[in-house]
Amino acid sequence: MKKITLLAALFGAFAMNAQIFSEDFNLEIVDDTNFAQFTGSDVDGDTEFWEVFDADGTGNAWAFSGLGADSDSWESGNPNSPMQVDNYLITTDPIDLTGSTGTEITFLMGTYQTNGTFLDDQYSVHMSTSNDPGVISGETAITTRLVGDDVVAAAGDGSDSVASITLDASAYDGMTVYLIFRHWNTFDQNSVLIDDVVVDGTLGIGDESFNGFIYFVDANNQLKLSANTNMESLQLFNVLGQQVVSQRLSNTNEVVNISALNTGVYIATVTIEGQNKTFKIVKK
Image (cartoon, rainbow, N blue to C red; front, side, top):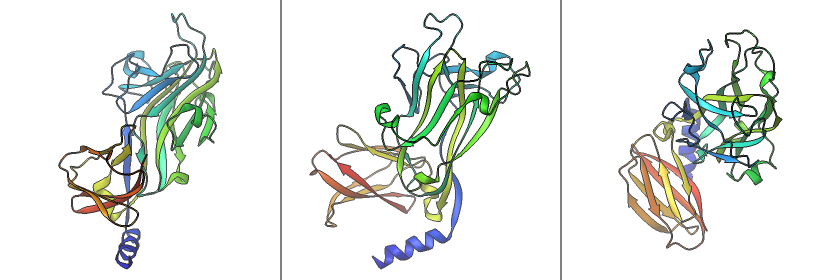
């Protein structure tokens, strides 16, 4: 125990800023509602989801480029338009902030509008331990704002239709959470456009190898692990300190079957490049 405490103090004395999660949507397909790292939820039930838009195809002289994510409350030619929206865009996997302090979320937000009107689309940004919209809707958002709070969108060429937003998410330091964009409480305005999403924070010196590391237990009691660098090994210990799993790893994405374990809390240790990361999981 003294050794662990000493190492924790040593790592806490040296820190570096690191990108923990990022998504620029450029590997998506235009007009698709499926995303590589996000899942859409159409709570209002009008079959209109967050979808992929082509920023370069608009001809606007704005900060967006490539592809991004779009949710509309009005859309030309859409038979469901205008729409009373309640659309969620939730990271498919939770984001591991257990080694992070001073966590921040940065993204580009904008609208198609270029005439200074219809800027009252409302959106919220959440972090939550749940990916259930019914739970998220009852939680306090990191921010709730209107598109027009940050963009003027009146230049005619789209140059003022995008803003860079940075949010303090340090309240979630040390947690494993989902990132959520919610477009809601809006009828017959225009759009919320999102691009270049980044979550970053200050990581201890021993955590560089774990940049991008994500873990979660799915409904089938599979412990899923993902990292930017090949993982080397996993050990699981019960609350008595007894080792119950020891498995060699070799890839950036790994699945460990824990269905045979008893229900309860376990301590996991993953090794990457000789560095260890310890975290808690729950077997249900």
